[in-house]
Image (cartoon, rainbow, N blue to C red; front, side):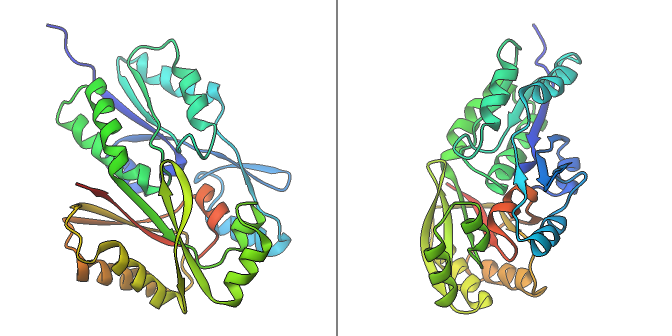
Length: 285
């Protein structure tokens, strides 16, 4: 009987896991290119979200991000297939970038390379990566993991509260009138990932602390359809250091999760949402 191949998990840097979590689950990360003016960097390696914010505050110009090239994915795939591994590769959802297309092109003639379209971003992908890694540790074959992920992705609930629409406006994802109106009225919209695309949900009004507590209540209170095994609290950098612990307390008030993980969003997500954005991400039953 032929032995099942060991499974290697690869992700691009948009999955927003911490360095510790990438290491814990033995995930190889392909960083997205980030451009500040005429200078190019690699997300999480030679540039940080703080660098982005400093650049924007100085120039009032948004950094630019790009998808990893197909040959970049190909090199990473061959590095592991040559050692006898099967591969599960995650990219940011195909509705947000050509990363998934490039990865699929790179995998076209390789055996046992499964490119997943998570139809999500940030730790909406991270939830799937951690689960895939746990299945791999249990000895589940790569083909079966890929099939299970196709089912899981429709159960991932990803949303964020945006504190300031300036970055979304500068990036062309909302109109200047909308951004100005939201700021004047102190509105903080909830951005939800639905069917692989971002959509605007409820709009919260007031200071960020109160808005985040109401957001957590709306996402979690009284629900019986949530898988309470794991939840991510992911943010883009918070000016108020007490906000993340306050969100954690609010989560615990409405649902008990076996594991709550905290991560800082990478450069790609931060480029679009700006600082003081926070989301809770989990899986439905």
